[in-house]
Every structure is written in C-alpha cells, then in structure tokens.
Length: 379
Length: 257
Image (tube, rainbow over the protein chains, first blue to last red):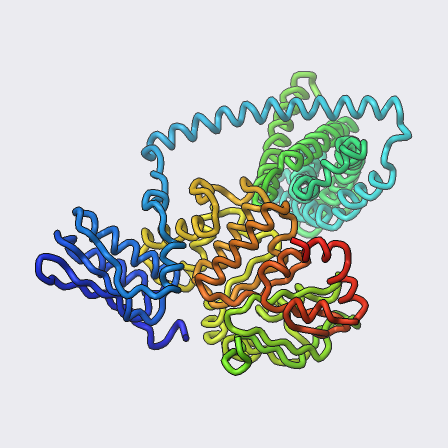
C-alpha cells in the first residue's frame, strides 16, 4: 500500500474490430496522473464501441478516478459508445463521487488583455486614492469631534492608556532617536567642515549645524523614525484588534473606539514628539560639537559662543512648532489605516506598509509647506 | 473488523507531553486502525489537540514513540518524514487556509510541493476537490476571507484531501457549524471516508458526530487514553466524567436521533 514504491500506471488502447479495447492497469493515483493524462490525450478517439477495462487496477484514488472519467469523455468525443468493464464496487463509489460536469473543472478565463488591465489599474488606483483622501478627511473630522467631546468631559480621558502610550512612543524611542541624531550631527559637522575649511570659514560649521538641525533635521528625523516605529505599531495594533472583532465588541459594550484607541495614541504622540524633537536637537548639536572639536579643534566654549550668535531663539521654535503637527499626522494616519484593516492577516501587513509610507510622505510634504510659510512670514 | 485483520496505521506508545511543570500526557498509548473513524474526546485541557499536533509533528513530546504508517516519525530522517507527510492530510480548526491564496490555489499548494503535475491537470484536480467537498464552483476562485466559516472548513478539508491521503486528521471539524451544516459535514466525511478508504483521526466535542460517524472513541482523561471502544462501550463506563459526558442531556438528545 505504499504510495511511493512499486506503483506504475499504464493505459492500453488497441483497435478491436470496428471498436476499441482499452484497459487501465496498475496504480491510478495522483502521483501518476500526469503520465496517464498524457497517454490518454495521445489515444485517438476512434469511432465504434469502446470498452474500458478496470479489472486490472491495483489502486485507484480520486485523481485516478478523475482520469478514468476523462478517458471516457475523451473517447466519447466523436460520439462513440463507451462502456466500463470490470468495475469493482469500491471503484464504482469513487467514480460516482468524482463524476461531474467537465465545465466546472476549467478555471474561469483570465480576464481582459494586459493593456486593458493596466489602464484599468491606473483608473482604479486614481479612484481609490480619491476615496482614500475623502475617508481620511472624514476620519480626521471624527477624531476632532471626539476630541472636542473629550475637552468638554475631560474625565473620560483614558489616563493609563495615555501614559502607557507616552512610554511606548516617547520614552522607549529615546535610544534610537538619540543615537541617530547624534550621528547626523557628526556627519554634518564633518562634511561641513570639509567644505568650509577651503574658505577658511570653518567657524561657520556652527551656524550650519545650528540652523539645519534646529530648524529642519531634528524634527524631520524624529518624525520619520516615529512614523516608522509608532505609526506602524498603531496600525498593526488597531488592525489586529479589528480582525479579531475587538473593535466591534467595544462598540456593542458602548465604548467609542476612537475615544478609547485613537485619542490616547494621538495625545501621547502630541506630547512625546516635541519632547523627542528637543532631545534630537540636543543630541545632534552634541554630535556636531564633538566632531567640530575633534576635526576642527573648535573647543566647546567657542562652539557655544558662536552658536549663541548664530541662532536666534525663534530658529529653535520654528523647528519645534512643527512637531505637534507631524505628531497629529502620524497618529491619525496610523489609526486610520488600522481601522481600515479587514479580512485577513495579509491586510494588516498591507495597511501597515501603507501607513508608514503615507505618514512619511505627508510629514515631508507638510515640512515643505511649513518652509514656504515661514519664509513668507519672514522667520 | 476482526482484531486479526486490522492494521495499526498510527501507534502511540508511552507518550509524555509536558509544558513547563504541567504534564499533559503521561504514558499515553493509542492505536488507530486502518480504515476507521476514531473520535478523540475529553474535557477542556486534556490535550486532545496537543495529541493531534504531537502525532503530526508540530509538537515534540518529552518521551514516547509514535509510528505512523510504519515510520517512527520522531526519529525518521527528513526524507522519510516527508514521504509520510505526503500520505496524511490535516484540517485545522478554522481551516487554516493561506489567506493570500484563493481556495483553488490553496488546494494546489500540497500538490505543487509533493508532485510534478502539469499545471492544467493540477488546476483540474484542485477544482475536482472543491466539488468533492460540496462547495459551489465559484468558491474555487474566492479568497478565504470571502467565505463563511462552514465553507472555510470545507475548503480546508479539500486541501487536506489534495494528495488523496491515507490518514486525515481533523481538529473539531464541526465546531462552529450550525446543526444542519454539521450534519452535512459529518455525512461528507463519512462518504469520503468510505469511498476513499480513509483513516480518520478526529478531535471532537460533537456528540452527534460521535454517534453518526465514529467507529471507535478514545477518551482522554487522567493524562492518558482512559477508555477506547465503540459508543456502546462508552455507555457502560462508570468513570464519572465519561458517565456525565455520554449520559448527560445532550448525549441523550444525540442518542435519540
């Protein structure tokens, strides 16, 4: 009874008088189906009565039985009368089980040609993007409305959840954000020094560092890291809760998922991201200052004096004021994508990717808008 | 089936499963005979699913031996294990279909892995299995998330049967189905079992299934197979849990039908 050994299948067909005598021999099992299929296809569907003898079968499974049915159908294609002979009762049951309309075994046609599918795909993604934008704006409205309700009734704020989320998105992100900002500072100081030294203007490394880190890089780097780290986590957390019907359960109990899940995350990020930005600013300047000291022999005292002259307080605030806006963007996109998860585990993955891509995209677009705005108001 | 003619396709001896300090099975022995439908019952936490997972190799036992189709699966080399895996099919509780593939593609997965069939024929056989488990033709091109729980179970069974296995492991096949669906599913398993000569290893809570399709029942209690035998034997047991199980109101209702 071993499926692997001593099991070959044979299909015999020979002319006999004006008809044909065929026989199925050996093990007609799924492993041999390919060979049997080819052998049957080679048999000419001749006229006259055909007899298929099944008495020499050693084994038959559903795939084998299907091949017998296929042989019958193939030989009867020209209107020949096909009979089965030597059918054992157990084979009879199997043959009845697999008998069905040939049409239902054919996969449906693959659809329109690729060019139509390609153009259709472009159209569909455009419409989808428009729907996405509409839904996202709707979600922002929902969050703002819930936030307004929370301001009227502040005791409904989930304080434990808020603190827990601040720890997750803020405190736990300190090492990675600190390290990366420090390294960015090092790289900027080194590259800047290299160029400015040619003009004997190496002291301006401090201006370069101060302005670029405080205005742009600190907040941008922090937001991008947080989008990858926490935006994705929001989507995955809310998404898997959605999959396991936890969100539905909340609704039936009378809890508002936006209030319970989205607001604590949103507020946590609004609190944590400015703090992280400040931390990134300091670490970036520290890295830059250290590199300036090493490669330009610029002592810390001089670095600080120059920094004070180069940087006005509003340079620092121009960077910092962007942080809460980016925080809202990341939190809303992350939560929205989580709420959009449906169906399968695969959807969680897709939405998490989409969430990170969209929030980083929006953060950079907003940053550009901020730049234009600040230059227009003269900051 | 007379005792002499029966052949053990699964033979478990002295099995011990332990998670941390919690012993699930201790010195558990079990035989499954070729061509029978064996129902595994037991209270919650008696390790019914763990036993199934151990036999199919998803859980490594602390001690004991497991022979499946004459192969010592715990100590067999990769190739031999692979050959045995080809001869069994497993149905998990919720079907465990791969969510990124359609039903037909799910059924083709084991065929692709183990056999070398032309694409067209493989697609044909996959659709045949869809028909065999009583799903409508259009279900073949749907994704698991688009199917109802009962349809997912049927699709899972179709995947378990993809290679025409000799043994099928079913984990609570009728759990979560409505009574009509459960009865239909029971009949489906019985029909397929008789037509294909399958050996069925079924973990179940469903008394109707036990009455309708199981040839033999093994009761897990006190960390081992406490009793095994046909339903008549179960009814005569004096062990309190088994009495409660087979003489409770639900059991009476199932027997009455």
